[in-house]
Image (cartoon, rainbow, N blue to C red):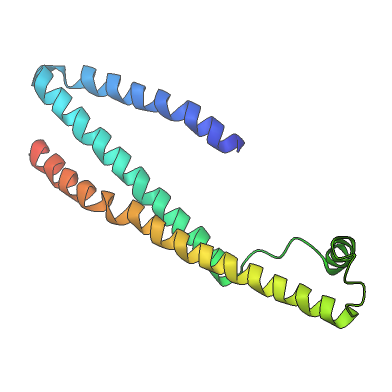
Length: 146
């Protein structure tokens, strides 16, 4: 969380410094050419960040798919909650409560795996959509520099 706060503060400063240095360095090319180059670099930067973020998100979701997070409630807490909530069904056996708990844990793991699959599909959008834009603007940048 601290790294994100630091990055969100630091990144705009780096971009502003890059824009100023680039504009001063290429002053002789003309204002329109400098603005066009800056726009190209900013689009390249934004799309590259989206692709990298999508890749990181896919990796994290794949990790959740392979090894889903553990169920947060232990059996003793579940049994105590079950006993408090089911005062009318005091004749439920310990094995039935245990079977219900095991089913709850299994359902939670399945829910986490489904959520991870959903996250992978969503994260692919952060790669599939900006990648062609990045490739197009990269070719455009190469043509501009020739």
